[in-house]
Image (cartoon, rainbow, N blue to C red; front, side, top):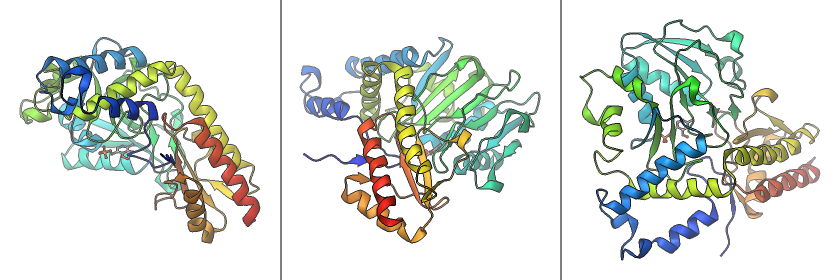
Length: 361
Ligand SMILES: Cc1ncc(COP(=O)(O)O)c(C=O)c1O
C-alpha cells in the first residue's frame, strides 16, 4: 500500500489509524453482524455513536453544558442561511468579511432581507490580513457578529477573539475546528463542515448556545430550525450516519493524541516548517498572508517565477506530495495541513520546497 501526503483543502487527509479502524469495522460493526451504515438510526448502536461524539466534543473542546452539539446536513453552506433565518430577528447583523466564505455568508443574509452591517472588509488587499480590534465598527445591539475564523482560500486565520461587548459571535470554523482550544464564553454558535478537520464530507457540526434557539421565528420550515434537531438529539430525520460515525472515530483519535493543546502545538510546529521554507527562500516563494494573520491550516504562497507553478505541482506530486495547487483567487500553491497531516508530511514538503528553489533559482 502506498499512501501519499495529501494537501487537499477538503475533503482532506484523514488519520490512517481512523481509516484502519473504519476498515476493520466496516463489514461487522462490534459483532452486530452488519456495518454501522446498515444500522437503524433509531437503534441503540447508532444512538450510542451520536451520544459518544457529543460527549467527546464537550470534553475535548471544553464546551459548556448550555451548548448543544448538532449534526446537520447541507454543509457549512446551509449555515450561511440558517444562521440569519434563526438568529437575526429584526435586528442588525454584523459580518466581518475576510474572504470568499464570509462573502457567501453575507450574501445569504442579504437575500433574506436582513439588515447586514459589514463591520470590516479585507477585500482591498485580496484578503491577505485579519482586521484589528480597532478596525471593527460594531453595532452595539446587533443580533450577532459573524466571523470566519480561518480563511481556507486565502490562508489567513484569526489569532484573537474580537471583543464584541457581549454580542454573541457566530463563527464559521469549517477549516480550523478542533485545531486549538477555544473559550466558548464569547461565542453564541460555532459551525463547521466536517470535511477538513472533523471527518469526511456529508455532515456539518453546529454547536449552539441553547438560549439563542429561542429566537427562531415560527415561520421557518421544521428542518431548518435548530431547535428541531436539538430536541431530537440530531435524530429528527435520517442523519448521515456513516459520516457521524467517522467524526466519532476522529474525536477518539484527537483524544488519544493528547487533545487540543497537543493538536495546537503540533499544528504550530508543522506550519512553522513550511513558513520557514518560504521565508528562507530569498524571495523564491512569497507568502500571501501578512505574517500576523498566517493560518496554521492553509499555507498559501506564490512562486516569484510564475511559469514554474505547474512544474512545482507536478514534481511535488511525483514525490508523493499531492493537492498543492492554489485556489485561483490567490494562484500559486496552497498546502492544507489540518490536524490529520502528519509532521513528516510538512517536513517532506519543506525539504521539497528547499530543493526545488535551489534547483530553479
Ligand atoms: C471556511 C469555509 N466555510 C464554508 C465552506 C463551505 O463548506 P461546505 O462545502 O460544507 O458547504 C468551506 C469549504 O471549503 C470553508 O472553507
